[in-house]
Length: 229
Image (tube, rainbow, N blue to C red; front, side, top):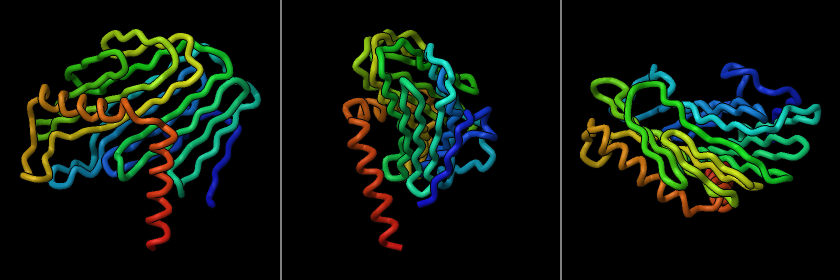
């Protein structure tokens, strides 16, 4: 098993670990107090754009500080990352089959945190009790949606591009990039509102899921492909 372990925090995109699905690249900057997960879209069949800009950044802010006991482990074979220090543990994976990047955060004591989306281009943002979705035009022929949703035992307040969570010891965060491309008819949907709703629908499907169940499915899929080689 190929493991990469570091006791130093990531210092930006170049120093961060990459998790990728069939449609999403996620660069995780594993800071404890201000984590940044930068999302980029890839491989949209006939609509592929090889040099797409970053689409959005998911930011997670907490009151916790970096400690000497920080340790991060990256498993490129399983497409997983695990981060630990006293009082907090983060587990993250990216699933090719489900096209989702997911992170679970466990706190030893109830915490207050904020999760927000920072789009890289103009578009529309909608939020509700558990999710935030964004859609915008990458260029004249490509419309993209980016969304995230959470499961938590804390209390949530939503405001435009962010969810503020209090009294939480467990956060499950799911992230997706959605394209307007329809593989069945080969048509690209350019209406930002329609892609926004498509993205919201994808996040609704994830809201009822459990992180551990999805990760189990992901690891079974990895094992299946490994045995099939």
